[in-house]
Every structure is written in structure tokens, then in C-alpha cells.
Image 1 (tube, rainbow, N blue to C red):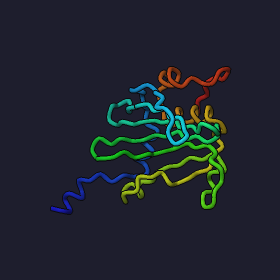
Image 2: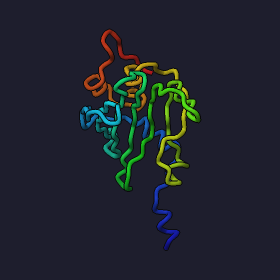
Image 3: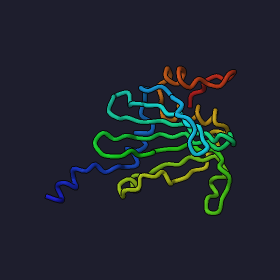
Image 4: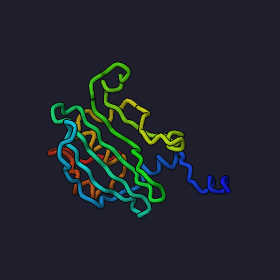
Length: 168
């Protein structure tokens, strides 16, 4: 009986996680400022996969004093299990600290299937990026990378004044 129950529990794969990140998404709750907390302004918005199977929350957090200190994330809300999983964060500069050298460059945090399957739902894997160097650029990168529909991108996250929207 115990083995049967274990088989019913869905195991995550890295491919499934990547599919969640890049599946087409529509915004179902418009971006809303949620005030300032711990020295950062935060904006949150709700998304769903176009097929209606998956739900997500997006967030944009920016430090009140240092514009280069920001985080833009994608949180998955699985319907069949308790809790949420942050799949991805596009981060700015936080300032290098002992043991956290990645804070001195723009970087992306991701979670892996092994971590999730072992109960670790923290996006601790870090990759340096040159895809963006400002919050505005990071936002444009993020909304395209997580595949928010073009109409929703244009409505809720238009490119900064004077820029055209580029596809990648």
C-alpha cells in the first residue's frame, strides 16, 4: 500500500520545470503594488497557463534606496499539492558579501527537480547573466522569457518609452 501511494505522488523533472517556465501565460490578475516591506517596493500579479492547467504568481521587488537591487520572480502554485514553488528569479546587484559572490553581478536563480523532489523548494542555483542591466531591461527579459502573451505584455508591461519590443 505504501509503495502504491508513493507512485501516486508526481515527481518533478527538470524538463517539466522548464516547460512550466516557458509555457504561454496570460495575466489573470493585473499587477498591483503591495507597498513596501523590508525596504523594498513589491508588485504582484497573477498568471495562468493559456491551457488553464497551471497557475502562477509573478512579482517584482525593488529596493527603495538602490535601484540596481531588484528581483523579478515566477512562483508556481500546483493545484494538486500544498505550497508554492519559486521557479525562477531574475536578480540585480545586491552587493558582494562573503560566501555570496553572485550578488556582485546580474544573475538568475532557478530551482531543480532534484531539489523539489527532496523537499527543497528554494531556487538556489545561480547563473550569471548579461541579458539585462537595469530593472526595466530585466522586466522586459522576464515577461518574454516566461512567455506572457504579447497582448498582456503590451498592456501591463510596455517597453520603456522610446524602445521597441524585440522578440528573442
